[in-house]
Image (cartoon, rainbow over the protein chains, first blue to last red):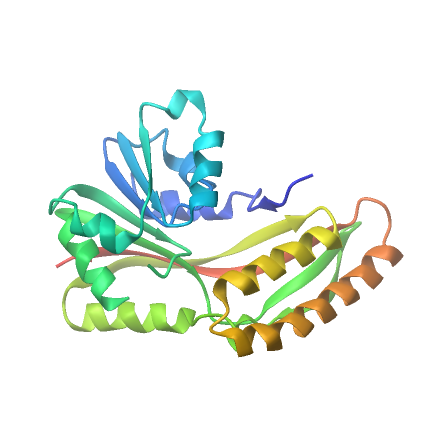
Length: 101
Length: 148
């Protein structure tokens, strides 16, 4: 059996208490293997998820549920590089989850 | 970290929000749950070796003081990591130390601490009934900040 992180959904509940994801374009910084991404992505309009660790982003791409494929983009990139290449005012919500940038 | 938060502000729409989630800078209990009771194997003292989550708190405090963001809402919850075995916990802690230790010296000091916790957890799991669960409990802070 694999490690199970937050099967109680405490984090998901706390996240939904903080934001309504309906119709929102979300940037998730440090998405890791997508553990948190799967929990809210079906509510968002679009998710851009970035992660500098190639191994983690490969896991996220591998596990991407088919129903979320047209909604989530994964990028294997450090935040500073992503930010440098991004236009201002592009996102409704930014999630900084267990990440120090 | 402060520069990253300035960049996040630039990427956010003026009506947008930053959601920050990070563990609080304190020790996290490692617990064995069985038959409705909880035995404590010990505390994972992240503060001693981990890159400083206190820095994250300080950076957030600085950007709010500078008026770049304002805290709209905040809360605290427990994030529980369930391990199927002590071996799995050992591997996870080792990977966490490799990834998050401040430096080689901190990593060297953290390894025996993690191993002592794993050994204690092993003793308790061996004495526990079948179906006992090994759990790391991390107190976690979440906040919603709006660009100002």
